[in-house]
Amino acid sequence: MSAIAATATRTVARDRAVAAVDTRAIAMKRRGRGRGIRTGISAAVIVLWCLAPFYWMIVTAFRDVGYTYDTAFWPTHVTFDNFTTAFSTQLGNHLGKALLNSLFIGVCVTAIALIIGIFAAYALARLDFRFKGILLGVILGASMFPGVALITPLFQLFTNIGWMGSYQALILPSISFVLPLTVYTLTSFFREMPWDLEEAARIDGCTQAQAFRKIILPLAAPAVFTTAILAFISSWNEYLISSQLSSDATQPVTVAIASFAGSQPHQEPYTTVMAAGTIVTIPLVILVLIFQRRIVAGLTAGGVKG
Amino acid sequence: MTTLLGSVSSRLRRPVGRKGLAPALLLVPATLILIAIIGWPLLQLVIVSFQQFGRAQVFGQAAPFVGFDNYTRVLGDPQFWQVLARSFLFCIVNVVVTMSLGTLVALLMTRLNKFFRTLVSVGLLLAWAMPALTAVIIWGWLFDTQFGVVNYLLSQVTGIDFTGHSWLIDPISFFAVAGVIITWQSVPFVAFTIYAGLTQVPDEVMEAAQLDGAGAVQRFRLIVFPYLKSIFLVVTILQVIWDLRVFTQIFALQGIGGIREQTSTLGVYIYQTSLGTGDYGAGGAIAVIMVIIMLAISIFYVRQTIKEEAL
Image (cartoon, rainbow over all chains, first blue to last red; front, side):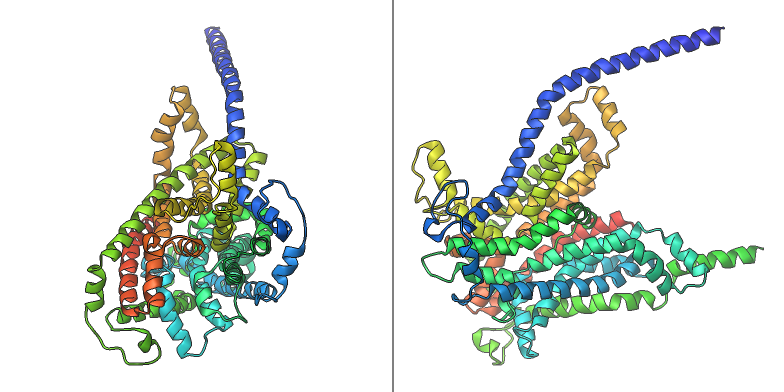
């Protein structure tokens, strides 16, 4: 009897507590509405801040060259001419070729860095050996290097072996810049893998390599893909080394853009430059829009940017 | 029985504990590339920094060793110290601004619903993904002296005629523009990383603190910050490194307008000394000094990361 009474009082007490929490929640929600509006405005400001330069780039890119200095905020005098000019080679630019170059370099860098990176990350995440910490430290340290310090020695090295202006002179440095990011991101992804499955496969008679290839790698495919996107973006955006080691035939888009900006002294061809900028940025925009979530996951997993 | 169990468990453990050649073989390609592209040039750089190395030596003339001559020359040059101080100051301001804005954006993202959060993160990612050089060209166009939309807007809003106002001639204003461009591209990474950390803070703890009457600032200082301390540390170190070695933004902005002598940072200074004036010996010495500074900062980062990875 007393037990029931006790339960009853407890229930009442709990209901009262729940009611108290409810009123608090309502009060908070009421306060939250004002806060919600402020949050919304802040979000809008951030998006505006991030996209305003893109917007102005696109508006200028589509504006007739005669109205370059028009300050109307919306698109006026819309034309595709700037894109035609950007792709034409009359000013000595090779944007079309440069796009192909960047694509080729990016794909090579990504593929090679991933293969090498998977090997290294497997060893770092899965195997136990001496100097592991030091090795990871060296790889991470390599990503901290100021690229500008490497220009002169690389210039000499590639001149000596006759690689100046070749694709491999652009691909190899790019791989070494991307590699620390690849290794580190893959290592942190690989740590989360269900390695029991690999052991099970081994007990069933697979070799370790087979077990990795048939069981773990398919499971790790999303992680590998994420890393590939990051590696590709990083390679696509590389400018410093390419600007010194590329030739007209092998120059990537970042270098091509720079040559646009300086092609006519004292009269910057803004509309054409902005059209070229738009073209260079489109592949990145597409990647971001499709793989937004993956890119964020990769960024926060690795914590290393080229 | 025990031997059987023992053999099974040792077989299970073997791949993890294997000491043989496998790790070495797997790591050979990565190590080789890093040695070839970073290790070898670094060695060359150190050698050059002890040589008298000018344009003639680039074309094959013998380079005589001059001991610490290049270093004493560089360290005795007031311009080097100006550049160094400028680089550090610019870096510190940038890091403080980037970290504060990044944290605010991350905190805001926790309050947004899924749709708005996706919208914000797409915007941030676009800014992050843009090639640095393209970003400089666009921002340079926005801040253009004659026809820039920023000057136009300022004229409209303030009523003072800003047309013809140069943002890049005055060094302070030059670095303000450079800072805007750099933070525009680096806030996203900070925001995403801190946001990822914020989602790890247990809801119960936050709720309990709220019920106990802790305000937003108190909750951040007493709960969120301790939870995310290591994330803040790592991200701050990374920002310091990236902002200290900044090159493209400053170099490209100087090309648009801006006085080189008053606006060069370490990276650009190395470039100008080596490739600009052809004094590769001094350029090498500055580069070696910069590498040492970077290494000193990186060691904090590397140690912190390895500690966290608990290898």
